[in-house]
Image (cartoon, helix red, strand yellow):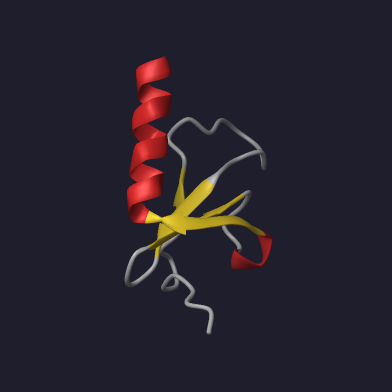
Length: 64
């Protein structure tokens, strides 16, 4: 069974500029975080746990 984010749950990265080259993130009920290259679940490129996503974000912020 695939759990999709609720409609409108996709959030555009705050680092995204103009155009379509953006990253969208959506937390799903439970423990998954989904990452897509646009606000369309059909273009899902990554699904990970919330803990792993938090670790990734922390590492990116620390690396500057």
